[in-house]
Amino acid sequence: QVQLVESGGGLVQPGGSLRLSCAASASIVRIVRMDWYRQAPGKERELVAFITAGGNTNYYADSVKGRFTISRDNTKNTVYLQMNSLKSEDTAVYYCKTHYNRDYWGQGTQVTVSS
Image (cartoon, rainbow, N blue to C red; front, side, top):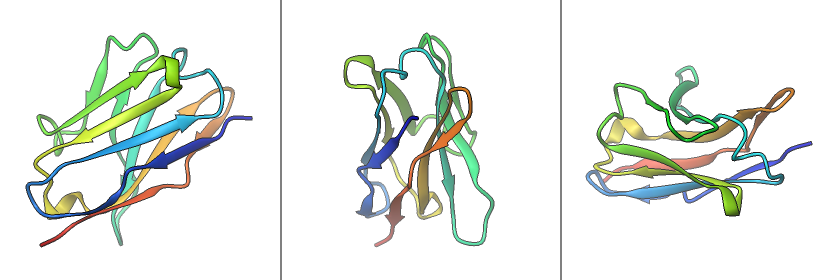
């Protein structure tokens, strides 16, 4: 059983920054792909970014490319999503997800970008 716990969400003004964290309950971060998804009100959940097990390949959705950075700290079993130049359209609940024999999702953390 794996638990994922997100943190770091909040209210930020347009142009601001936030760093989300996803802490895993087991030492799996270094051996599995870790994903960040988001779901805005009335919209489907979408993949924002992922980082592969080796950390050599990252993926970013076009909408966040150049503004968001995904990284991992294997010693802390934690994956991060650094979000810069935030826009109102980034407002959503952000979820961490991985697959380790089955899919695991965190509970989500709310990010609100508003003036």
